Length: 270
Ligand code: 5RP
Image (cartoon, rainbow, N blue to C red; front, side, top):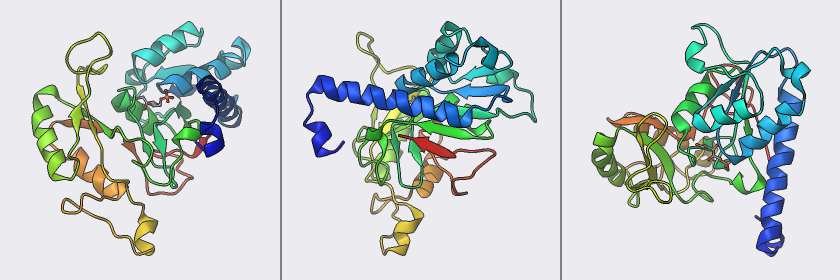
């Protein structure tokens, strides 16, 4: 947020954020939901509410032939409540793909790598995103930062098998994430948060993650010793830790025009 935006009264700031989410969502739907599409992934979070609103606003005739695939309980309810045709990714036959998937993000870097999982839905979100020919990220202006971990200080969300959580915390400390912690339950709920998949979430803060181009400018990829990592080296290491089901780093090295198996958005809207 710029100085002029942060100087706004809190209520006006909140209104500006909501308006940004809404505008980004309507633009993303206008640009990427083609009339011939039949299978559409719908992510999770507050921004996606506007994506679904924009789709529903097209009217029943426009969406009649489309099926909408959720990434968890929240988006399932959203799709149903909006009168859209709900379908499940488990029913998508092998060899088929979604035409497009829309989702939000917690932070987006210069290369359109993402941190996701602020809403604890990252595992199903990644399955839906990677099942789509196109993955479109919709995020308000607060989410854009040069390097992941600059604005989103809570850490990288990691979905873990509960019995493995202490071991994963030990490994994360060794990798330089000294303040990694198990995410608590929602207000009024004791214990850890439990995901739609019966797992826990660990939030692991790291120093801002480097991009390949940083090494060209003389900044070098780190490791356990330095605690500084490139996005891909960290993702590769985290996903191999025993007990880790999925990580909230959505990244790719194939450039922006990924059309298939995308873990990285083809476009991001702010
Ligand atoms: C949930 C997510 C969300 O997409 C992310 O947290 C952004 O949410 P919001 O649109 O409410 O800011 O990854 O797991």
